[in-house]
Image 1: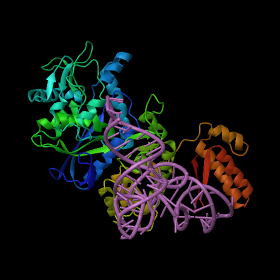
Image 2 (image 1 turned 90 degrees about the vertical axis):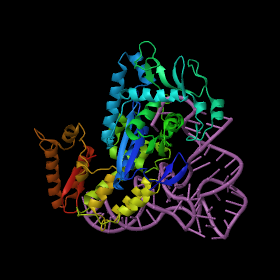
Image 3 (image 1 turned 180 degrees about the horizontal axis):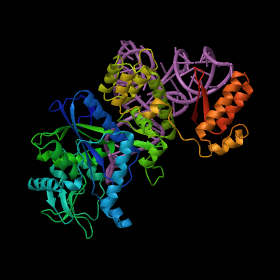
Image 4 (image 1 turned 45 degrees about the vertical axis):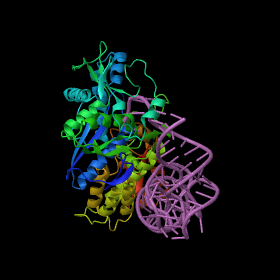
Length: 470
RNA sequence: GGCGACGUAGCCAAGUGGUAAGGCAGAGCUCUGCAAAAGCUCCAUUCGGCAGUUCGAAUCUGCCCGUCGCCUCCA
């Protein structure tokens, strides 16, 4: 399998460092604000990558951290009067629920920054000892000038960065590029003890400490480190700067994978621009499987434009897959014509769009298609047939259905104590009689009346008539 | 100012040297009393523009135009 490696800026054949074990660290959420479509895309991408690596018979360890302490949550706590811990807990619970709806599997390990304080403190200590960090008035800082490879991942050089750097007034750094490893606490802020003073970890160090603790205690590197493209600089650059000076055998991660960002209606997602929608709300508006399909139809590393229109298209595509899946025989085993095509697509830098294209080609040919194989391939992409696949998606009848039906056909059907289903059955019987008598005017009138009440009829091939809410 | 990505049909989008996947929308046909649903067929002589390299370019090079992102918290 070939993957584009940000570290080398090249498409490379993926080989585990210690086969068959594959160790993946994905930068998770900082739950101090609501999750959005961008998070969904990123985690969906790594979810499918993980599934595919397992399909390829690798033994995957998947770690995704939670940065549960940061400036923003402390800020919010001050504003709202809530405890920072509750704020973080609530946002994270909401995020987890969204992931569950999207069918993103739970990580093998889900380390919280605040539960790895000893490891973080230990790592900072090592950096201080080696001269990569210094204690200042505001905290412990990383000395960027000391790390020669700084900027290698993101393709920047220290000189350019210095030219464009803003000088932060309140900090006590030797150099504007230096960043905090440990921030001394101001009154009222959450604190943990450290040899340099009580405080909290800076952003970046938690990932270095936790990936080392969980994936690479010997300091010889792990396989894949991932996250959204916006993490390349400074987050991942800083992680490398923190980790590699302490390693026996850099690089920190063999492959660095970055998912493309999401734009919302062709604009950057931003609360101030007014085009931000929480993921939880999005999941109310759209079928989670359609969201998954929409993301997988775009190359993982490209900017993706999330619009109502693209979601409508994905939804229609998903329905077609459902319809076809339902129509396929439940055959045993797999006929084997689809899987090799899927593998060929995914092996080429994880081309999920191509894979989906193969699936559409496959279902367009019901003579050779096989439900078991289709199910397996869909599962690989994290799309699982559920109850809604077996029958038409049960959608709610409109709330005023019975009232409308009364207005339309109250004189022909008895609605007293009748259920909506029973009432529809009555109309269906009237219509069947009219059709038997070739009174098509009457049968069409009944069909149109039901449609106005929000129910659409279908005369199936066998002569049976089915209905569904519209 | 520095770094980078992208520009392919009405919309979304794959394709990185060998002659344009796929989805949505649209059109026609089949089925149907008519619809609906489904199936079949059609739908870019052309890939932002211009020049160049090549037997051959959407794919490589140069310039131009346009859109967007990162450089500050960000998946």
